Length: 135
Image (cartoon, rainbow, N blue to C red; front, side, top):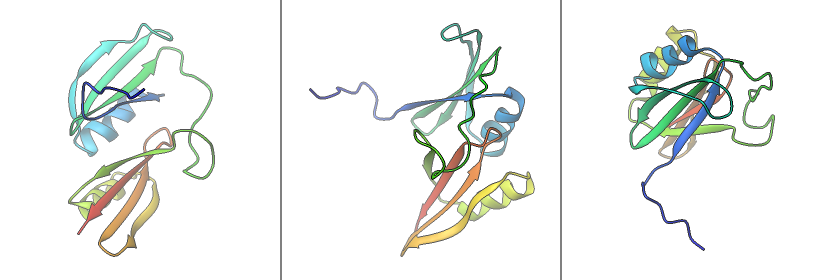
């Protein structure tokens, strides 16, 4: 069996603890387009903030009763989804803006192989976001 995709990208759901802080990070700082908000009746009452990241939809889900389990801790600290990656063309500008905003840098700008530079930051809930720039 093969999955027959109806869209060439994925939608990513991230459960958050604070809408204002997460929107300030993803929408305001990183500049992801805010498509809108919808009620989140499944799994508990709340709201889903829908943000565009290229062809991918980032779904920030804020439940009225925030789950107590924490997924933070970096890529080698727990099992499961640990980070997602954005291919970018302005890595230094992104990292400068993140530093000025007080965002935690998980991995500073690092050339991982010739022509490939990465950096990683933490969102307000400790989830890691990776930026990759190819030269």
